[in-house]
Structure formats: structure tokens, C-alpha cells
Image (cartoon, rainbow, N blue to C red):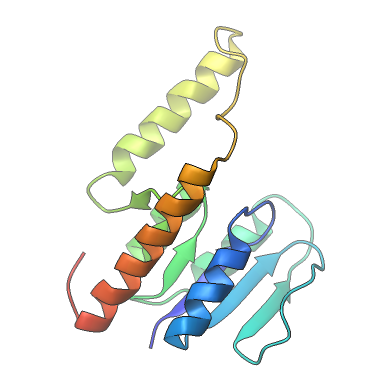
Length: 152
């Protein structure tokens, strides 16, 4: 049975993950640099790691296994988890796959360069209801796919 790992710091869809995981009877691990409130459930575990850049990401990448599900908008973390055979869904419902992760990494680097040069000053658009709905659909589809034994 797959487990769901949430990159907890700043994740806007934790409540949705808890709800879907409960429906399917899946365990959830919320990995964060600080304590946060989680539902009282033996299926949901909060893992607080040391503060520091990429400490939570490192913990997730070291513990995730094949067919687990990772919820994160962090593209380098998505790349690391895909290499371990996990499924990765961004906070807005965008699935990261072995086929699209290279383009996502390249675009991330390009946008970072443009921001550093002052060509681009804004960040991502605000999280919307449509993003939340798209995320729920992607999570449900991923779980069903794993349960059926389908490949990516």
C-alpha cells in the first residue's frame, strides 16, 4: 500500500490530502521544519526535521519508496523522488513525470535567471479554487492508477 509524503512547509492542500487518504485508508507523512497541527489519526504522522535548506526535502527523498506519492511544488525534490519510483503531484495538481521533469527543471532555472537579472519580478500566480480542484482530481487518479497496478 503506498504512503503519501507531504512537503509540509507551505503546502496549501494538506487538508485535501488528509481527506482523500482517509477515504482510501492510506498513511500520510507530513515532513516539516517546524511543528504544525495535524488531525488526530493513527494514519497521519508529523515528522519535524532540523531547520535548514532542503532538510525536509532530503528526508523525503531518502524515505520515499516506489509507488509512494509525494505532494510538493519543489521541482528538484520531484526529480529526486521520481528517480526512486515515486509518483509526484505539485500543489496545483500538476503531475511530475519522468517525461516532463526535465522541462520543469529547465523552466525553473530559466525563470530563476530572469528574476536574478530583474527581467521578471513576480512569482507564481496565487493558489485558486481551480488549482485545488485540479489537485484533488490528480491525487485521486494517481491513487486509482497505483491500486490498479498501472504504470505511469
